[in-house]
Image (cartoon, rainbow, N blue to C red; front, side, top):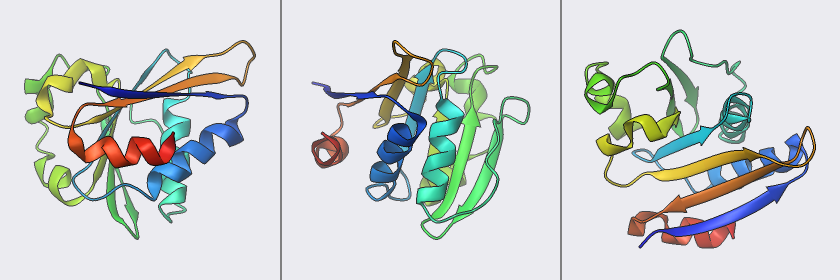
Length: 153
């Protein structure tokens, strides 16, 4: 059964705080699937996560490159945009498996390829009632994420 927590944030700083709290709980091999409408804040969340992991690299949307890798003290962070992928099989053919084992993987539009992964953390970012307000829903069913979701609750 999936466990879910919902956070209502009112600013980019609030969103960055969630990413920062999550960063301290991630390990190599973790998969985070990000979903939400265009401009909801998926790349912003990833940028905050990379910074919280100790990197000052410039994080950009991988929309056209499909994947970017950022080196952090916690190991590499693979940032993928699955919007243009037709499914999990196409993701497999990108040849990124090594990063899935040795780094942290964050996939925007992750819902499109969720069937490829056994135990991801899903994060949905939705618009709130102001320009900067968001609803951040974190959910997972794998035991790996139980303590993480409890820590973030």
